[in-house]
Image (cartoon, rainbow, N blue to C red):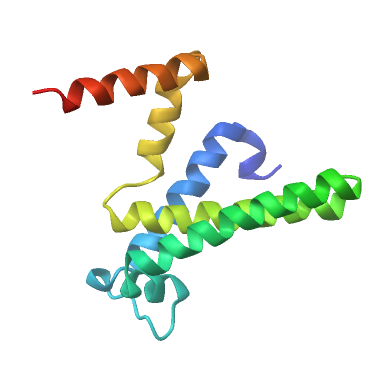
Length: 136
């Protein structure tokens, strides 16, 4: 039995995201990241325009992969394509988080905060908060 067999799936997810976040953090220029030898360091070096463009591209690719699955019979190969494109989207989103001094822990905390709340109610509450913040 491996160590991963005894760890709950949610913990494994958090651990995997934390490990990836640490690698991304290590690729920052301040931590010695070399844009000539690391794709992540290159993205961070180029700045927000580069990784934000990639987020848009990857999000579109997730949509296209899902549409392919809808129209192509949702085969294992098409399901894997959705997984692959979603992994790319998550990775590039995590690069953005790192750039802005954030990490997956904040995203997980926000998802936990929303847990048990209707999406419709949560969205309405965000609109109310935004209006309140705009008022003097």
